[in-house]
Amino acid sequence: MSADIFDFWTNVRGDARVHPADEKVLERSEHGFCLDCLPSNIDGNLKEASVVLLFVNPGMNEIDLTEATDHKAHAKYKEMRAGNRPLRGEEDASRAYKWLLPITKDFGPWDVVQKKAAVLNIAAYHSREFKSPHMLAALPSCRVCLDWAQSVLFPQAVAGKLVVICLRAASYWGLRHKDQRRFGETLFAPLTSRGGHMLKGNEREAVVAAARRALGTA
Image (cartoon, rainbow, N blue to C red; front, top):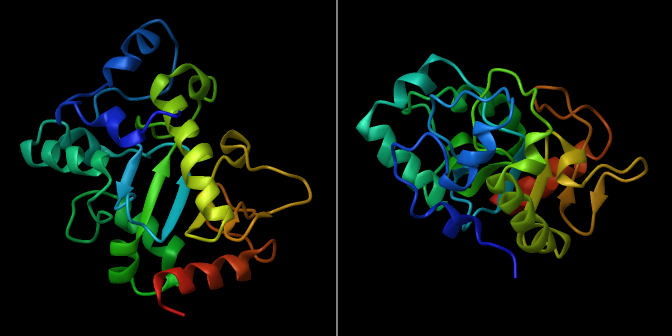
């Protein structure tokens, strides 16, 4: 049986910079992650999301460093890891809202997206640029995330129970295929820019239509 991603994070303190299971690996490996920020693979209500967007790891700016010493942010990250908090929005200091808004604008109004969509990253740790692909196989937290996605999330999308859209690092998620951008009913891996914006063609129209149906904005 695969590890549950929510159980994996449940006992991690809100102010923790590293998951205990990852500590030794991070100590003995060169990597590009900033361990002065708060980690989370999850943003949004992943437990009940109708649409899940897949990326590789959280970005980073000065706000992420500031939040690491903010008690309110500690509580927020605990809620994020539990997968039952809406996506961070305009009311939040995070850069996540400004980044996600243009990516999701065709899916419907932000207030709907915020409540019904979620983000899942393979890696929980922040970086300004992702230059640590070797760590995705080495870190227990990454392996738990990938295993949970492959065994729990993806089968639901293949069956059409929710929509999963891979917007970054399809090869690491196991969704890169030279002739296929859609798997089953609603598991998608469209071509994207480095910033996670879908390119024209390559299932883009089908992805948008499926997302809008799932969110009730069609």
